[in-house]
Structures are given as C-alpha cells and as structure tokens.
Image (cartoon, rainbow over all chains, first blue to last red; front, side, top):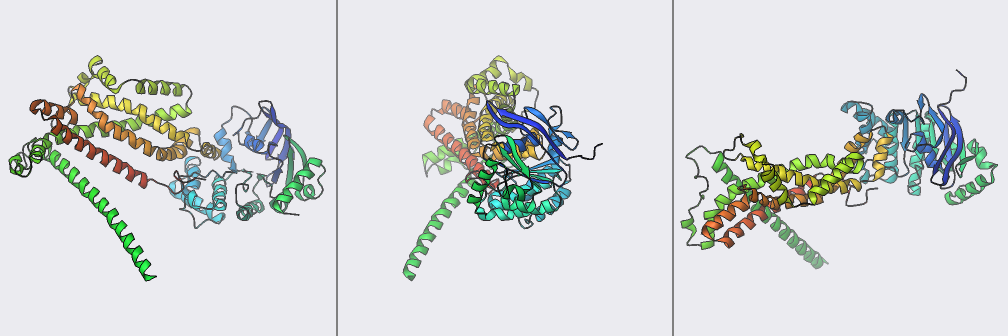
Length: 252
Length: 301
C-alpha cells in the first residue's frame, strides 16, 4: 500500500454533451478532511463534475474512485455509493411535502434502516447542528431560503457521508441569507468533513477551504491554496474571472 | 370615525351571517338527504321483521300528504323504491373508484417511469378511453358472459347480485384508464429534481417514487380526480343496460308502468344531484385535509 491514499481520485475524466466538450481530461485528488472549492465561469463543467462523482451523470472516459467505490465502474451499486456521498443542491430541492424533520428522517429510515424513534432522534440532532432545532415541524414552504438550505445540509449530513458535494449552495439565496449557510459550511469544514464545493463565495473559500480549483472550458486551469489563487492568479482567465466575481460580491 | 367603524362592522357581520347561513343550509340538506337514505337502507335490510315499514313502502302515507300537494304525494310514493336503487348506484361508484385507484397508480407510474410497461400502459389506456363504456359492459356481459362466474355468491338484501359484479369490473377497468391519466399528468407536474434529490441520498428509483414523487403527485391529482368521481356517479347509470337494478333502471321501469316520466326522472335528477354534491364536498374536504403549505397552489420553491 502506498503512503498516499486519497479519499477521492478523479483521473482523466472527460464528458461531452453532443458536440460540446463539458469536461476535458480532468484529474485531481482529495484527502480525508480536505475542503476543495471549485470556481469557474458558467458552463465550465463544475456541476457536471460534481454530478459525475455521485453518478447522477455518467462520464464518457476516465475514472473516479471514492474510498472503496469504483464510481465509474458501470456494474457498481449506485445507491450504496450515494449513501457515502452527500449532495447539497443549488435549487435546494427539499421534499416539498415533508416537514424539515421528515426531510431528514426519510433517508435514515429508508436507506439506513433506522427505527422511527432513532431516526427522529438522529434527525433532530442534525437539525440542531445547523441551528434549526426550533423548526422541526415546519414545511419547506414555511421556511426562508437560508433555512431551507440548512435543512438540505442536515439531510445530507444525516447519511454520515464520507464526502459532501455542494453545488452552488448559496447562489439561489438572497444576499443577506448567504452568511447563515456559509457559516454552517465553515463549521463542518472545521469539524473535519471532506467537502467538494462549487461556489463563488471567496470569503468562505478563504476561511474554510484547503484548496481551490479553477475550471475553465472543462479543464482545470489552475489549482492552489485559496489565498494564493485569489491574490496571485497565474492564469489569465482565472484573474479575469476572479476580478469579475469580486466586482459582483463587492469583496476586494 | 366611529361611524365608518360601525358601518364596516355591520357589513362584515352581514357577510359572515350570509356565509354561515349557506353553510348551515348545505349541512342541513346533507343531513336530511343522507339521514333519509340511511334510514331507508337500515329499514329494508337491517331491522328485525315487524319493525319499521315493509321495503319499498314509504314512512309517510302518500294519501296523508296529498291534500298539501299532489307532487309531494307522488314523491312520497315513489322515493322509497328509488332510495333502494340508489344503494346500488353508490356501491357501483364507490367500489369502482376505489378499485380503479388501486390499479391506476401502478398503471400511471409504469406509463411515466417504465420502458416496456409504459407501452403496455399506453395501449391499455388508449383502448379503454377510445371505446364506449357501454360497449365495454356489453363485451363483459354478453360476449364473455362473466355473470356466470358470480352466480353462486349470496345476493340477499343489500348484497349485490351477480350482474352487479360484472358492472363493477367494467367500471373499474374504465376508471383505471381515466384515473391513470389524471395521475400521470400529476406525476409529470412534480419537479424532476425531487426525484434526483431522493436518489442523491441513496433511495432507489422505486423508493423515490413511492416516498417523494407519489405523495406530491396524488395531492396535485385531487381536483381532476374529483371530476372522475362525479362522472362515475352518473356513468353508473349505464349498468341499467346490462340489467343492474340501479337508480336509472328502476326509474325507467317505474315510469314504464305509470307513464309519469317527468315526475320520476325529476326525482332521479334530485337524487343524482345529492350524490354529486356530496361527492364534491367530500373531495374538497379531502383536498383541504391533505393540503401542505407551499405545495401546489402557490409557488413551491
């Protein structure tokens, strides 16, 4: 066994939709406890890459491994893989007909086989962890965007995943609600959770991320510690993009 | 200032009074209608011999109300027979809609999420919706002679006779096709990402459909589905043509005897109206009961 045993290995992954190359020979690894942020312009393949990691999208070529799961192997049990990979969506996608508590207990009961009582207890704990202990019986329609996204995070956490994927978790939220979600994410990062995060929140990246990737036209244009990538981007496209993001978010 | 306040109060009170008056009238009408129907059925089939009136005979003496109004006397005389017949109308409708629902859910799920089963489901739906209900009943009754299958069953009193089972099979098959279409369109109106989110936490496609998509879809389906219930109440009259003694059939034979077509069918219309209004009130109640804040009606995200 080699010394280097990453949790997630992405190797030469390519994907095209029709004539359009969405991912082009992407390779990177993540260790346990790593928090990697992925940035890049719209259409650069960030979301597709995330979705390849939990097989919501199939790769055309290349290989992905997560712990013992050979993700890209067609024969694997995708449900077993997805038990170990949590996902938080841009559109949140809470189960609209279920209360906050039941959004979290559904997976516990149906996938992890918890009893009703155990599921309730575990779900309450997760919701308290994201600061929603007082909203257990609220329906998604009764919650603010930030609260909904925190339920979304609790729902993913409850499965005790090895890796959490975040697909622009704050970009559908009103600006004043972004902070409550990034605060929860920063807490998770500090607690040692392995996270792959597509976001343009440079504040979060600077504070919580161990690593930043810049994706451009389906390829990794640049990779490095967030501070370095933001201060001294080597790639021209990176610099240009980060400059525009700063103008929007108002961060220097 | 106090004057405008007073005016507003009066106006509000007026609206409240007329609103609750309408509600009370509906409730009173419902209690009267169902109280009478249940009393008739109880009287015919469940009271010990010698208690109550003989089946088919009215509680009041028609001759006693004749001085008040001839129409009233006519109604009092014939309503008992119609009430008995209404029992079969209710049985046909309720059993067929419930059985139909049980089969319509898998048929619609197969149509939306299946591959081969989708084609089978489509073929079934088109065949059934594309041919007349009456023709379907004739095939079951005359061509397949299905009623022989049910000959041995007890058919005393409130228990239906063999031919009623044939009608129930026909209405159920027909209703599956229509209900499946209502549910299919409801399934399609559930946000696709709901199933993606379910898959992402490790639920299988089947679990995702069962626990996430269907509970939402069935709520969306209620308004259209209520329509099917109302149709079925009235379509159940087609059972008359395969000799089921339901409401329309009994009315037709009474009228053939006394030639009072207008009178009899006016009474029948009132009974159907009572059943239909009850059904739509019931479904509105169900819709309210299962409503979830933010699901349907207003934007869900």
